[in-house]
Length: 182
Image (cartoon, rainbow, N blue to C red; front, side):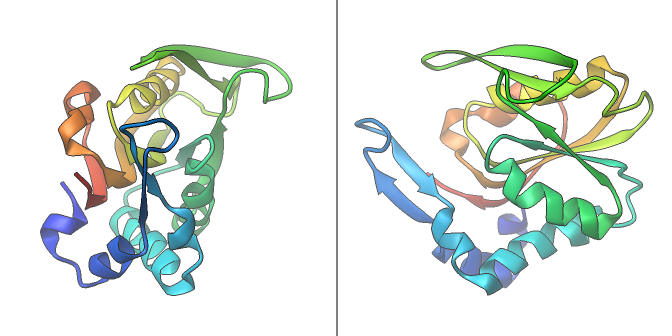
């Protein structure tokens, strides 16, 4: 499901603030740059508000943000819905004891880590990132949360690249996106 399909009037403003940078970080990639969205306070607020409106009152106790751009959208959503924010980080960035989840990218492997004890069994979690492409990072995030007994309610992304079919890898977990990009 996406707000884009629902035609919320704020979506056009959000979409118009996302800059597409060709051939970054390598030839053939059309990079979806959200830094231009962040420069516009109204578009940034509308982005956060759309997520808050969707998740307020859904009994979500954890917002898990994926490094690094999930750290931009996750904390304000968590504050507004009354949930804690849990950062999911790249290896060796979190002090103390962590659990890890490796995953495969188109061009290699990566890993996400979460503090042990940050999420308790039975908690309801929302996973937040800026973009879903192939879905590998979101799957790793969900696996981390489910391994400690959390229930992943939904994944939320600002942008989806539907041609890369990441939604299909989510094992039936719902995905909510604001903007589709091709």
